[in-house]
Length: 77
Image (cartoon, rainbow, N blue to C red; front, side, top):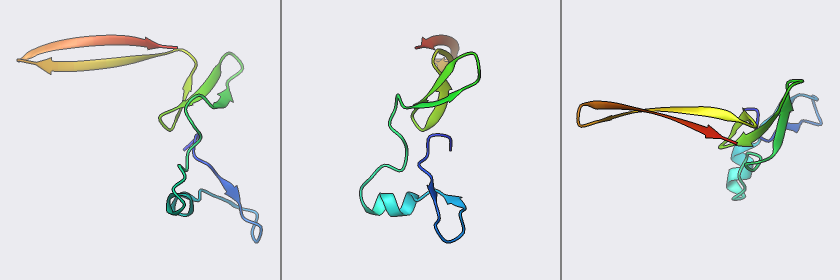
């Protein structure tokens, strides 16, 4: 939910995510990919497919094809 858009209610001061409201207007309720979302003191994090991810991260894929397991490591940055 780190890359979801949140609004503050004027009546209570609490926060909520207006997913249904924005969807009804045809607007994506998430910040676009590449939006800065966090810094842990060492590196920046950015929104990617609705997740807040480090600038450089590793994706691991396990693929079973014809009873053989293939393991792929993909570095994204």
